Length: 374
Image (cartoon, rainbow, N blue to C red; front, side, top):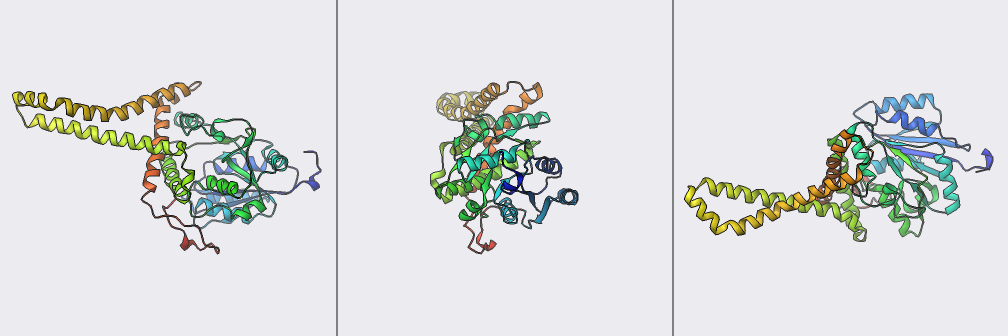
């Protein structure tokens, strides 16, 4: 990019944050350290938090005039993103999340790619990086095809058109044309936005050089909540457009159904055998076994084989994916992979029983939005 600063387009970085006290300061400092020489600003929509997120954000804004804060009263992700980008003043828009650390030169490269490709959205890879053993295991699972599936922004690939990308870099006119993020969705809002951009005949472009460091959840409960919520909202996307139900998205619900059904039937069969044994004496029990053992054993053994087979598959996948991890992270990797599969799958299945979401009305009336709470 050889243009002088006065010739360069203005760039607005936008984000929405809530409960991000552990990461916010570093995320914002990384954004402000970008070397983009043209007009530049950062707008953050701050939601109601249970930690010191707002105090940290206000301190950052007091020290950095480039950073502007606005309120996100609902705390919802798509609501906050829409509030943030609509409050910006430049034509080139760069999305950042509260767990995402931009590398040097990211904004400059994003603007170059938008101009070179003519795409409505360009983005790259989520590069997960952990600190403790569990977070390291989650990071490895997220970058493995055995964890989230073989998708470019997780596992890599060459530059080119894509269904979706991590975060995203846009022109204002393209976001305005498709209406921004769908506020009827609590999660999966980025995938849905890219899907609607493609439906409008616009190009979504993946480039692996736009890698962004991501800090995964660092404890099991937080990981379960994240993936359950994402799966639950992903069903709403499928409900709106059934053609988006790809095999990759149906794999986790299918595995969850198989594991859950196998456990229920298998444990019920074991309980039945134990109960029959308790009600008979030794001779009667022997006769009973002769009459029913083949049929009963086949049922519960075959049923328990489903979760056993899944556990063996996860263990094997973890062994293949664990190269370079230390011992403590390796031991946690099967748990991380299984949690991501089963929490996402459970959320997807749970979402089938939620009220359908509806697209917001033209005036953005929130009464038009129904569905699971984020």
